[in-house]
Image 1 (cartoon, rainbow, N blue to C red):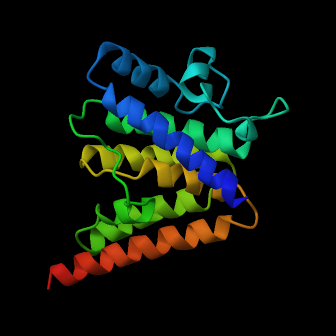
Image 2: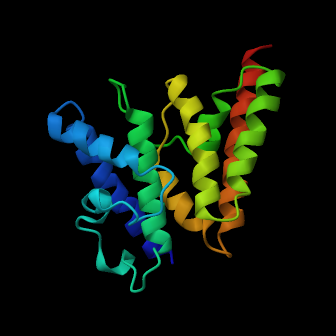
Image 3: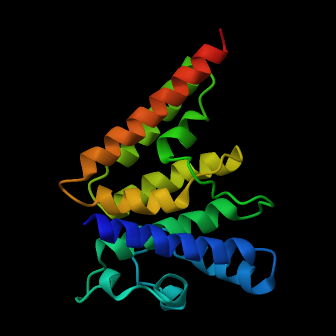
Amino acid sequence: MTSLRGSVGSYVAKRIESLTQTRNQSGGRAALARLRRGIGHEPGEIPMLWGEFLLELPEELRSRSSRPTRAEWAIYAALTLFAMHQQGKEETMHRKGIDLGRATARLVSDREDQERIWPRLNRVALACDMQELNYHLRQLIQILKSEDIPLDYVRLAEDLYDHQGEDTVNRVRLQWGRSFFAGVMNTDNSND
């Protein structure tokens, strides 16, 4: 299972690198625009996106049925959300080492912010399926985008893969919570 998680991360890293390197060229802008159209949809639902998330996808990550695999869902969600987050930005919104909890904590500067932001991360963590998770995650990433706060999209893809597993979902939730509250504690300490 860990090797599939790692394969998801490796694949997303290659796609993000390609998208980042070409984001100021017409082909790169077009690829990001196509990916943004996929937000809120299921992998495979929009044929024009197939090449954006299936091109060179390792065989072990591909579905053998009509339903998307955990890997396909994680890759698709991470890439479409990255495209939304990157829109209109000069600097890349992918930043290694900033998981969802840590990025979300950067939105908090006081108790009022914490009471407003924590429930949003909580809804993402407690989502029952990928469509619900995508819905809540999209709202949270729109806020990160508005504040120019980057996110590690490779890590997000790996976390989304694990979020779909009964034996790994709680590990992801715990990590997001730890990172969020560690970041909020650092913010609280800096305000003293």
